[in-house]
Image (tube, rainbow, N blue to C red; front, top):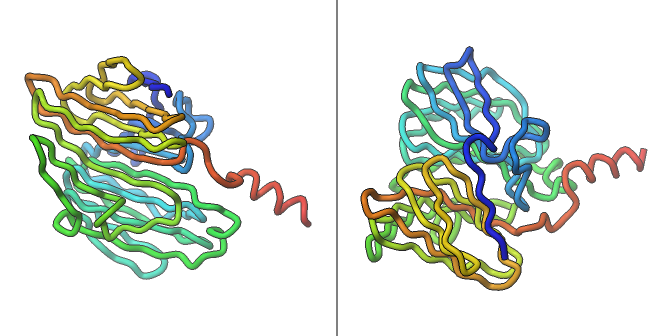
Length: 262
C-alpha cells in the first residue's frame, strides 16, 4: 500500500485561447512536466478554469474515452458527427472517440470543470464507431449519509458507461466528518481536493491533503481509505478508482505492433 501526494507545483499547467482558458493538470500529457504520467486506465486529468468566454477550435481525437465534468458554468459542444449540445453545471459529457472524431468547445466566462481521458484497449477502440452522450446533474445518482454527499459520476446507478475500467465520484464531506471507501486489491484511488482541507487516513498514517492537491492511494491488498474534512469547512473531493496497472498493452505498444506487422 502507498499514498503519494502532489502539490500544485508538481502538476502541469496549460492554457488555450490566449489565456482565456487555463488548466491545472494532476496528470498531464507525456512531456508536460507533471509528476504523475498516468494511473492505470486514467491517462489524463485537467482542471480547467475560464476567465472570459473561451473557445477551442475543431480538433481531432481517436481511441480514448474523454469525459468533461462541469463544476460550474456552461459549455457548448459541437462535433463532426453532428452533435450540437450544451452542458451545464454538474453535468457530464462523454466522447468515445473510436476510429476518429473532431470536436470544438465554447466555454462561458466563469466556467470550471475537468477534462479526463481514460484509455481502453486501443487494438479495439481505434476501430470502434465514435459516440457522444451527455447527462445533466439531475440524471446522476446522489446519496446523502452521515454528513457526506456522494454523487456517482461513473459507477453503480449512473447512466455513464465506459469500456475502460473506471469509477468516479464527486464527494462533499461536512466539516469534521469522514468518508470511507474500501479499495480492492490491485486498484488505486486518485483524488483531487477542489474545496476545503482534509486528512487522508491510509496505510496506518494520516496525511494532510489541501485544496488543489492531488493524491494517489494504491492498494496491494484490500485497503480502507478514510477522508476526514477539516473542522472549519466542508471538503469537496473528486475521486476516481482505476486498476493500478493498465491491464492490456498501452496505446504506444499497439502502435508499435501495428508498424511491425507492415
